Amino acid sequence: MKCPQCGHEEDKVVDSRPSQDGRAVRRRRECLQCKHRFTTYEYIEHQQLTVLKSDGRRERFDRTKIEHGIKLACNKLPVSSEQIKAMVDEIEAEISSRGKNEIKSEQIGELVMTRLRAVDDIAYVRFASVYRKFQDTAEFLKEIKKLLE
Image 1 (cartoon, rainbow, N blue to C red):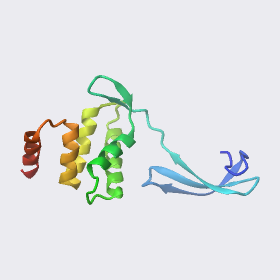
Image 2: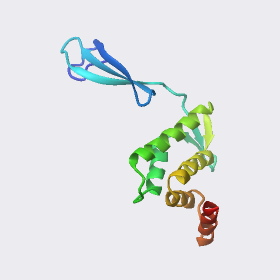
Image 3: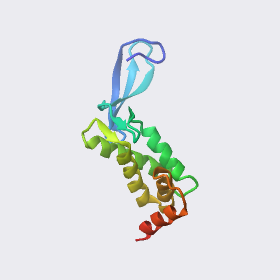
């Protein structure tokens, strides 16, 4: 690990502890040359996940896309950024636990809608309207009726 201060490649670990609910290890390091202290994080390297899009394309899984979609659905609603982060974490964990290298975008959309439905009905309907490409108010009403049941 190169020191961010002087570039020296030797350091010692001063402190090490679990971080991010056990998904990472936080290490405090000290450069052996200039004594500068800095923090590093160690993560598990997951196998690269591929998303199979509805048009047949394949693209690399990107959790920021999920987060962005949830944020748009929750815009101006009483949903905290911590709740959004927790939903994204849950979705990513569920996808990873399946142990497969590929997932359909439809499956990701359903996972998002399940989480949004539990958190906020309006956010759920907003997301569903874009995800399911509602064409008219009848489709909105149908989804709202399902929500009320």
